[in-house]
Amino acid sequence: MSDEAVKEEDRQLVARAQAGDISAFEALVEAHRDKVYGLTLRMTRSEADAAEITQDTFLSAYQHLKDFRGDAAFGSWVHRIAANNALMRLRHRRVVQAAEEELQSPEFTERGSLAEYPAWDWSRDAEGKILDAELGRAIQGAADRLPEGYREVFLLKDVDGLSYEQIAEVTGDSIPAIKSRLHRARLALREAIDQFYNQGNAGG
Image 1 (tube, one colour):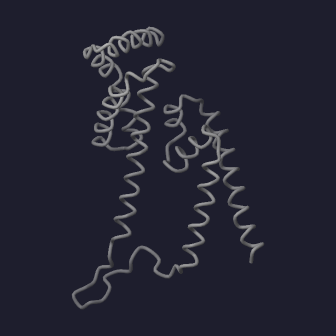
Image 2: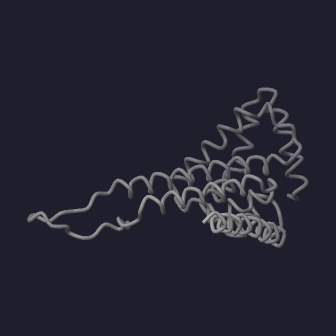
Image 3: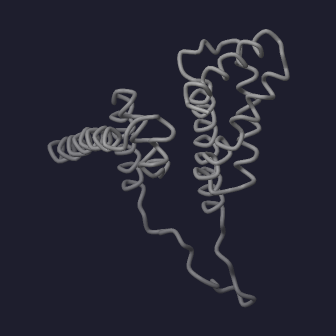
């Protein structure tokens, strides 16, 4: 079946599902479930997470089906929902991992001496931490000012660690276009970092 035929069949199923036909929505799930699962599996690298995200994605799609206007293909729409859900899962996973590492205490032997030195650097002073926080805010501010398409690519590549192929699948853009946006986004962020340090040197 051609792409246009698939899109037309999806449009008909969406119209029926929006009118209350549950079987039509079940047909949409059947048609797109494997691709959604494949996308989320590649992003999370976890079968359990991918299965859960896939279920959540179609539940969300069903709940918001009345808002779907058909400006994009149903497949693209549901893929975007899945990608967003996967990104939120990845970010949550990193936050939890960081919190667990922060809470890890040094281990002691029976004699009361340290079994091993902790992984983090105890010597970092408060001034260094404040500088890091200020730099982080400067970078965040620069990222927030990026045009939406540039910010999305930057977050997907440099924050979430997706490959160019994965980003292309999420956004529907070509890899050359993605690389171009990422290059410009990085230049803007590098300029923000340079300004931050220049201001600091000027102030010192």
